[in-house]
Image: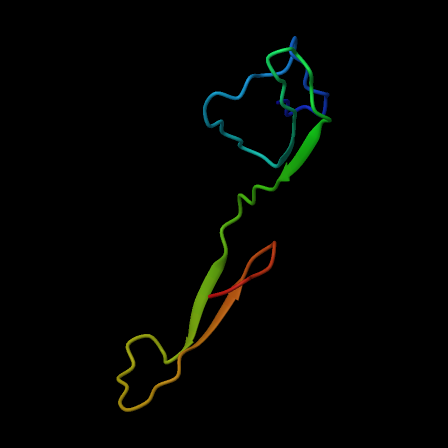
Length: 86
């Protein structure tokens, strides 16, 4: 596999033999080879890494409030990539 946009080859690609880490978004180009050295077409997989944590704020009830019965919790969530669920 390669992470720099180049086509992986037997000579300059990195053989996948363990998990690897990314610290930024990248596209992983990869291909497999059989024992005879025949290669499949290059595959690619974009991996997005979002280093910004989402924010979450409880709007109501107010901090320290005493509640009874059915109480609805109102909250706001935000993120630079969008919020999928809370």
